[in-house]
Image 1: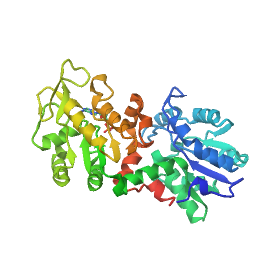
Image 2: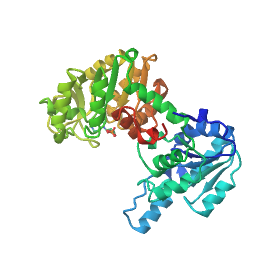
Image 3: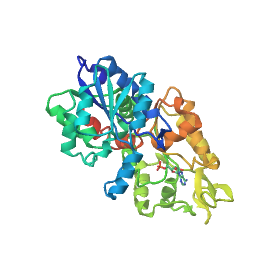
Image 4: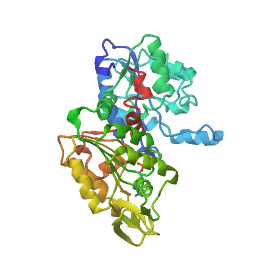
Length: 404
Ligand code: AMP
């Protein structure tokens, strides 16, 4: 796969770069600029080589099933303009912004770019055809480009016009397509988690979060690769009920009980379930909490975190690992009373600095950031959905395969 580093003689060439600037905005203010910062190495490399940068990104959601008025309101809310300002500050050079996604104004702005100049185009989802990989808009954007760079890992699991349509067209035209530094780092870390070498064993996966049904494919895939899978979070109770345990009012997906049984059978002891749980008589408005065996949760109580025995057992397993892949918090980490399980995993990872440890993004990345452990992981993915799909699909994602 070609990377930005390999691109030669691109001075004066128009590089269309798909970045992930899907930042949290409130009233037009950027609340967290991590994603903009993460794109800088690739952008600086291209600027240094004298390319003319046209940046494309989506921002938020725009549903075209709504009324015209609602669509306009969603567009106003998801306007990328503030990102151009912040990017300019971070790059230390002006960044031009094009408020439209096609037409003469865009063409003019691209024509006016100087070598090393940067233009950010309005939210790709202003185009109805973006998410459908509509060939018309893909061609409009591809026609602006002499080359294409994919650096939006968080969007690489989606075959949209900006992530799939453009590179397909450019490849047919014989133009260079490459990945950026951010995608290169993600691919290298997550490929290691799917093509497991002997030196990375024992390989331990930790899966938590809410639903088993969201994680079926990833469980299937990890069962083929891991030495142990530690299960926590709400999804644990579906497994515990499948084994005949009493789960009280814990959230259980009854339609996944057969699947959970099948996994436990296939795993032959490699899946570990929480022995004990911290339970409460409510989710947010609880008045009583206690620790009980996970298969003896009283009626009226629900499991909200793993208990101390589980913490001890899971921590030991993690500390013995050479490689760890983690997705999903072990408890309701948003509440102080149910953070211990998730923090214990962070602590165990901190104690194995020589192991290769990957946090799969999404809620678990938010949790480790909140608790201050991000630097203790070898890799923290920037794409929750994309990293899960990469594991599920044995290292393949449409937006990355197309630039191979
Ligand atoms: P997911 O998006 O599937 O990774 O789920 C993350 C969410 O699951 C977080 O908001 C957690 O608060 C929640 N969660 C984790 N453990 C539990 C639990 N035992 N009961 C209810 N929610 C949980």
